[in-house]
Length: 173
Image 1 (cartoon, rainbow, N blue to C red):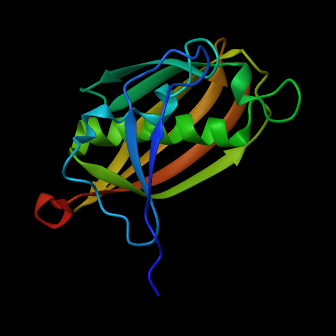
Image 2 (image 1 turned 180 degrees about the vertical axis):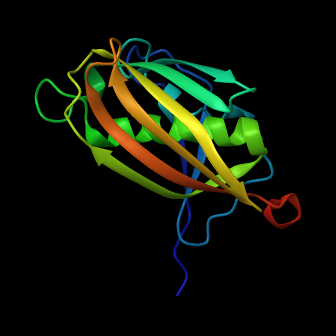
């Protein structure tokens, strides 16, 4: 049985002004479309209008193999009233540890992400995500992180992750 593929064109969220059209495919047999470049794709955390979703900056220390993210989650990321949604926190943890892995090992993919949520993060508060490369075993990179308040007095989450280096010969279309 074949599942139909639907072509969907999207526009930016919020102000109604168009952003570059994006191209998506849906269906079990979806494959990248060669006619249109993927240069129109956007990073998921950058998909909401400024100030409403993920507002962040990342910094990487190559000597220590550490990446730090300063994050303020906007009102579109609310879970229970007044607090960030756990999925939004997980997204930024994955983005931060992933950046640490990419800048250390090149092209990688998340193989495992384990998060322990300690306390809810108040909506629109600023937090710091500190990540570090713990070890490398062959193609595997192990990265851990914690999410804390700016004054480092409140621990919101801790995470461990495993990334696998991609083989460019096997990942090209």
